[in-house]
Length: 341
Image (cartoon, rainbow, N blue to C red; front, top):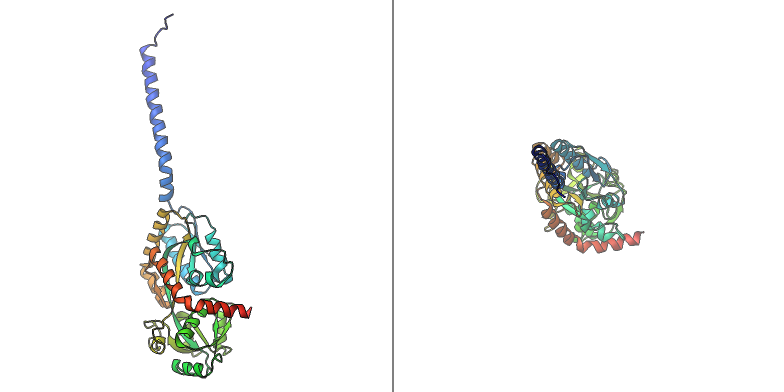
């Protein structure tokens, strides 16, 4: 049986339909391949949360809000600061460690959360490896201050009295394992003295205790110390850093009385581990641009801070270095803290 062939016009129409179908299928395939790349390239396309693991108004909060505001301008996407205080920074850090690793939940991490807390507290619900370091945001300068009625008027007098009367002189901190506690523990170790620790729930409360002469001493950030030194509410004994502090250039250096002693703290930006490399690269570029802003630099310097200049690799190296420096005093702090509990 023979089958009649289609007319020439029908064959031409069917051929055009086939060509069009192939073109549509090709376009859809190309679009499906491009979607993952577009999703990464579009970061961020919705609000980003920056977790600050401390109370509003502190140094970490100041840095967090300054950086968040500048990144919001740069991205044209809101960067929302969320304060999650408590547990020496553990609560906020844990929240970010458990967040989805997509770059939309970030941590402003204080140094102690990575160099001390994991070694001092039992059952810390995160590890350093749970985070991807992005950049150092700021380094903080510290001043050793004394109460207005303290029986010593200089660092040398303090050292003489501390050596003559071990554990008689008191110092305040923001709690066991806080930056202020670590600074004083390192100072005691380097100077060969023993002081009495009076922990407070937060650093601002401890500083009020020093101003009110309930406690003798404290290491406190320069931005907090300098105005109160000028107002006569505390004595400024010494600068803990290696360079002069704006607003108090005449402060003596601790390192001139206690050989090689310097102390700084820092804030870094962290993402959850396993955040995609392209997102981390975008974050590093954004932070670098923010920290180069003259406005940001001026505001940080006015707060007695040094603008960060380390990328993720540099921040990782800094954590390792600072952990080694703290190692000699961490076991002593842990032992002393367990006895007090």
